[in-house]
Image (cartoon, rainbow, N blue to C red):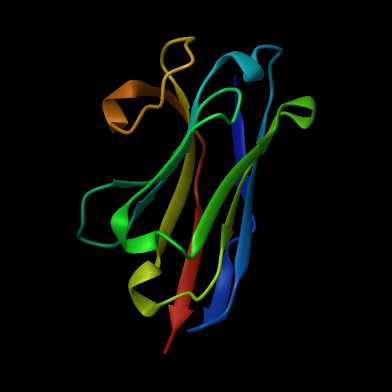
Length: 125
């Protein structure tokens, strides 16, 4: 499986971006997916996660109400809609596929095995 993230770029505070992650492979719908981010000098943190059927989602507290994760299994795609962006959202954003085939919600980076190359989001004030 390969993951290709896109949609990042520069944006002013208060603006919106939609990140997209396209997955190759035939088993996309069997795995939970997540979006992570890493700012310079900081550890990678989970932003949002979604189960394989979209039955459950998770958001880190700092993005609740502003970001929405979704997936379209028929298109092997997971999305992250980001609105009301803040300068502290500036980071490289990565999509990732869970390590194990399950219906669970995975929120630890250790639960993920396959990572995309990341897309940079820069929010200016």
